[in-house]
Structures are given as C-alpha cells and as structure tokens.
Image (cartoon, rainbow, N blue to C red):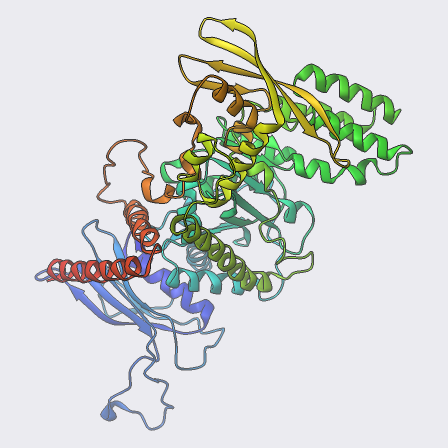
Length: 618
C-alpha cells in the first residue's frame, strides 16, 4: 500500500490497532541529513521488545513481550509513503478497548491523545473506506467515497460478519497477488456495499470479459448472503468468476457503485460486448448508464425456469408450455415468432396475463430471434449460479467465505486440467473426412472441438443445398435439414437460409449459431463445402476458443500497439507483470521439463530484482 503522507499511514495503522486491540508506538524514524524531513519509519506494537534491566520498575508489571507485530515504511520517489514490510501476528492477548496509542507530532517531544470526536470518526472512516489494491495504490480515501442517501442504510450483517470479512480480506491481501477489495460506507460509517476480486479472477478479466453474466439471484432471492457475481466463460466453455459483491439492497445506485468498482479491475476499462442478467429494472437502468455500448439481454434460461411458477395454475398448462417453447426456440424469423406467440395467447385464454404481457414488451431483450446481432460466446448455454453447490438460502456469511475458496480451487483445478488435456494430448479421433474437422482439431480446445465436431457430423443430416437468390458476389442458399424432434426419433424437414459472400468469404446462417455459440453451424459449413472452400475462414475461428489462447494473447491496458508504462501507476505495473508471469505459468504446465524451466526462470528473475533493489536502496 501507499499513502499520501506519513500521518495518513500512521493513522491507518493506528485505526487498525484500535479495532484489533493493541497500542502503537514508533520504534524507529529516519530523517534526511541536515534536514528534519522524515523518510522512513517502523511502527510497532507497544509490547515489542523488552525493557533493559536497569529501566525495569519493580513496582509495575512488565507489559512487553517481544511482540513481532510491525510495519516498515519509506518515502519513495513518487513522494508517497510505501509500506515495505508487514507483520500482523502478535504473541500476546489482544484487547478490544486499547484506544490510547500515542503519537509524536512534528518530531517534537509533546505527546497528544486523539480525543476529538470528529477526529476519531474521520480516522476510523479513513481506515474502513479505503479501497485497497495490494499491488499498488490506495484508490480512494474517505472523502472520495460517494454516498447515496436513497440507498438502504447498511448491509444486514450478523454478529461477527464484519470482522470475518475484514479478516478474510487481510489474509487474501497477504497471500493472493493482485487481490482487490472495496468497501462503500453510508453517512454513519456503516458498511453498505462490498466488492472483491482475487488474482485469478482479475487475470480472467483480461481474457474472458467479452460476454458476461451478472447474477443477482442470491440478492433477489432473499438469501442470507446478498451476493452478486460477475461470471464469464473461458476457452473450455467453463464458467469463470470475474468478481463478487455484497449489496445492501436492489437499487440502481447499489448496482452503479458495483459496476464502477468492478470496471477498475478491467484492463483498459473495456466494457463487455454483451451483458446477460435476470429481469430487473434497477439492473437495467444501471447497465444502460454504465455500459451504454454493451448489448444488455435478459437470461432466457431464467425466464423458462419461471414458466411453471407463472403459468402452472392455468387449465391447459401443458399445451401452453409447449406453445411457449415452440415460439421461442423454433422461430427463425420475427414474423414466425409473432404468429406463434399470438397462438399461445389464444391457448391461455387471457389476453392481459400480466407476466406474459411484460415478457412480450421486453421481447427484444430475451427472444433469440431478436438477438441475432448480439455476441454471446456461448455464455447463454451456461447460466447456472457459480456457487450453486456451495450456497443455500440459510448459508451464513462466515461459512460462505470458507466455501468461496473451496469453490474457486475446484474451478481452477478443472480449468488447469482442461488446459493440460487440450495442449498435451493428441488430437481427438476424427469422425469424418471433412477438411473442416481436421483443421480445427489442431486449433480448438478439446471441449470446443467436441461441439464443433458434432456440427460436422450433423452436416450429413442436411441435404439439397441450393441457390435461391444471387446479387453479384452475394448468394443466398437454402439448406434443408432433417431435424430430430424431442419425442422419440421422429424428424421433420426444416429450411435454413444461408447468406454467402464469395468475395469476402462471409457466411451467415439464419440460425445464428456463430453469434450465440462462437462457432459455425452445420448449415454454414454445408454452404462453404458446396462452394469448394476447404478451410473455415479465419474470421470464424475465434481466438478465445484456441488451446493456446492465453499464450498467444497478452491483453494490454492501452489496446493495440506497444503500451506506454506510467512511471507513477503501480497498479499498471502489477497488471502487466502479472500477465507476463501468467504466460510463463501457462507454458510451464505443458510438461515436467517446462515446469522445471519456468520455476528456474522465476527464481533467476527474483534474484535479479533483489539485486536491483539493493542498488536502489544503497
């Protein structure tokens, strides 16, 4: 951490000491030669060290225990005070009301107790409201935290929850590089909203923030934990966590605070192309304001799950449910959806059914036929709550913080194993002589190749590819397919229109599989094959699905071109160093030899950095 002044650093540590339960004293101070300007200090627990024998007052009980707790800090080139070393462990009991830390003012000998009520509140708020980034700067001070009077007053925390949150964040800061958290306070200094993101999730934001799912189901579902999660999809089609928040309530202002804080962690502050959420007017307003260029969609999965609840009481429920699904999933054109929806409304027999009416009004945000120009990267197929197996409605916050790490460890292990499997194993067995299958077996991760391989196999259910319209280089083809229906093995023939641009190798199918899932459908592949194209055009082989994606792509905070490093922005330093180190980690997973080489490279680099630091500090 860094602070603007020595007093800010002292006050921060002093406020921490008050809450933990110990006193602070200044162990050492260093001043510039021929000047009273301080450039270094060590603050320690008042129980540090031992009194000399001649100084011992036999009438007073010895209070020093040789306690190791301390912080060492130094004035650096940016004229900020940087914390260089921290020891948090004490070797004695801590009290909850030790509030008499003493501080020397301006290097003088006068000792002063901080007794002003305003001063107490200001310092405590400074300590609690800091947005802490372990890799760099202190983002906000108490006076910079915006307050929203209309927000719910504070988080509904039980006894011990606030301390559990704080303890968890302190531990993560020390053990997890690039860990970031932020706390939002109300006017009374009470905790209102919280956001945090660990190092692995921050790295995932560099790669997989193109399409995200903002899951507020724990908050809107009145769970014990008012949790909101940011979820993306990695190159194996697995869910990845991109950040977490605890909100005091569902308001536009709460979501705005959450989005602004999350955006600080995104390289280059890049907005997602597509954001999927449940239907919520507060979320909708916040996203429109914070991400005006993003395509905001409602989760089709969540809407379909509510059909039994919303329509189950109707007399002809089974027929209505089937008609609803047919209108949503089988409509290839808007006119087809409108007709199918009208038929379903007739089955309901109530033209003003409130839930159906509101769905129809919002149809542009959730019905697939209206979303063919949106980009989903397959995330719409995987919208289960990230902590689904770890949280129930009564899970307490302290238990969740323990399960949080277990869940992330399991997810990270699954991704690592999938990386190793995709990169080290030989290509999957080919199931056809199609050149497309051979081409992408060498490129895609194993899981994505399996999905694409299924499309290649289903090319054989398509037949009678023919031209129906020609306009210069642009040709529209009609591809017939025998589609397998849900009941039994019955199939029906359906027509799919595919646009093909001979001059630009552009191919677009009316089913929009590429936009929804990120790879070409069987109908588009048939048209390419019909026109003698032997490889899938590069524009349709997305880098995010490549098995070497993380190795070949190092995102920059400045977009394309060589990034210019800000000499004062330590957060940027950390982001770039972390991404570079991640490339070595990814390469080292390929083999035992690669692992040994990566480990040796890290050790050699660390030794070189230590040598530089020693020269700088001389």
